[in-house]
Image 1 (spheres, rainbow, N blue to C red):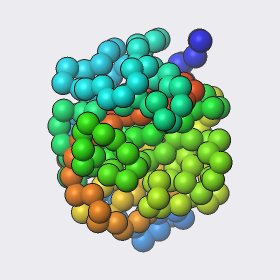
Image 2: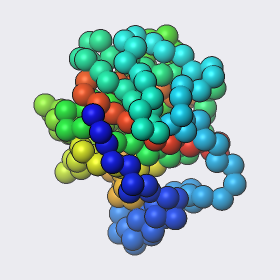
Image 3: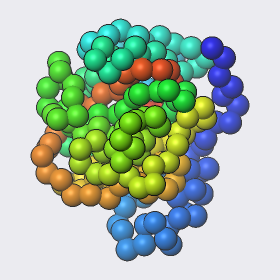
Length: 208
């Protein structure tokens, strides 16, 4: 599979998208600023970083400057789990997903050896989810999204803020989730491949 990656999204581009919706989607919401100091690149598309562990199906490889996950089914999903645990943080991820992709970014995983939407927060990437209320842009079983945005067959940017019991998710600058939920306090992050193809070009984190 060949994926064109010329339309790289820079932090300046992302800031522009965020400012465009600041007066509507984010009105009255004190979401931490994007940019500035403290960002750490944890995935750069050149390989699986040292310390990250594979859990479940191993469908991970490197292709065209991105970390590629090719899953089979959710029952045989594969995960990459960070060595570090996080409590309050902001995460920014550049990703590409095909139309059939079933993927996600799991936050504050309570068990690094068994990743599920019950013991972590799953920020979903799943345009074809049978029940779209927890599809792309939602946090599965925590925060619905309506209408569900589509991420398939293009590059996208997720920006996620976890501060205390408040979780805010933006996809390409548009807010999809702003919810309070205190079930999961801290833990590593995990990237999922559970069907179709997903590419992660860059993932950055800064602690808050």
